[in-house]
Image (cartoon, rainbow, N blue to C red; front, side, top):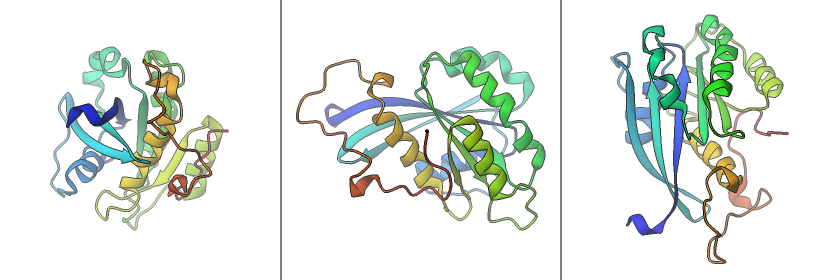
Length: 206
């Protein structure tokens, strides 16, 4: 039933081509992994319902191609998004180096001043690692983002990444609340057991 949904959130997945954005999305929405996943052409879009502390939230998740030729899609893609997942491949240092560029683009085109950001270090199942966990943590601390390491292939960290992002958005009502909440809606608090962080890294915004 749509009438029991607290809100609908627009979530973006951004990052360089080939970092596994579409694989993370497929794992989260369909619990599936395709080793032959093709590169996204233009924009992909999926929806999923998520329960956060008893509140049903509908996610509209946008996955865009990382190739430069699709940059004309950028303004409309970023508009009204409440959360963004920035993905890099731990086996490709160049994709990590580009995160700052993606953050700058997010700041330029986002229409939500306090959009919640999550950095996801993907492909931790691979052996030829080029980016350490400490480097990812340092970046997250520097730019005040959430952080988690994940693997779309093994499921590690994928569900937690989306749950942590959405939880932070829900705790920031001015990002999504366009009406006065009734007493029957509880957003919880960070001290409640349901708010125990599953992040394998830096998860504070302060």
